[in-house]
Structures are given as structure tokens and as C-alpha cells.
Length: 116
Image (cartoon, rainbow, N blue to C red; front, side, top):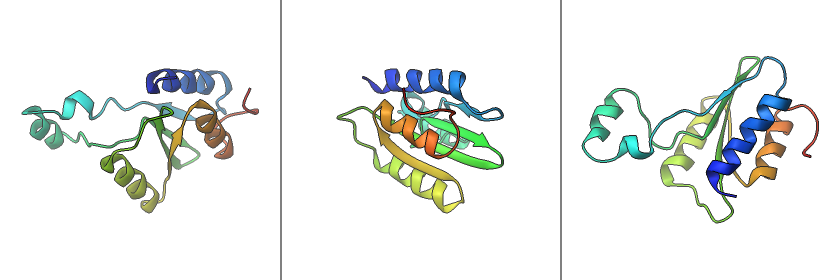
């Protein structure tokens, strides 16, 4: 699966199995918006490189997951974001593949039921 396919599948699971009250979204951040001349403009507007693919909030706790496909590798910025998020009191991790992503969401208590 590609990262986009994994992300879509994760959000399908969140819509179907998310615990009541969980809010989850993908921040449209970085990527093409961080390239070239616009990088300075966007950084000034708060765009941050390395922000995780999934951000969730539940019962006053903040969660972030960086998704990777089987051969994907996190960037330095992504690893720094995860470290900073955890240092700030949130829960963040980098996962490889759909099964690992779902397992983390279940462990965090954000999904009902087990991995199907």
C-alpha cells in the first residue's frame, strides 16, 4: 500500500470504529507548500515541516501518527516533530503500514474493537 492508501484506510477505520468524542484530521501542511520561494511565506503563516499525517484529540490528550509505507523512511523533520510532540506532553509515533497504525490507535484507546 502507498502512504495515501494507508492514510485513507486509517481514516475509514476512524470513521467506522472511532470512539465517541475523538477528533482526527490530516493537516494539509508541508509538502509542496514548503518548496521554493513560498517556504518563507508559509513558515511565517505557521506551516511547519514534518507535521505528522494524523492528528487526533481525545479527552484532552493530543495524538500524532506519521504514516510510512513498507519502504518509506521518516525525514529528519518528521522525527523531530514526533520528539517535540512527545516532549510537549502529547503522544506521537511513526508507524509502518496499516496494521501497525491501527494497533497504535487501538492501544491509545481511539478505536473500538480489534484489527480486522
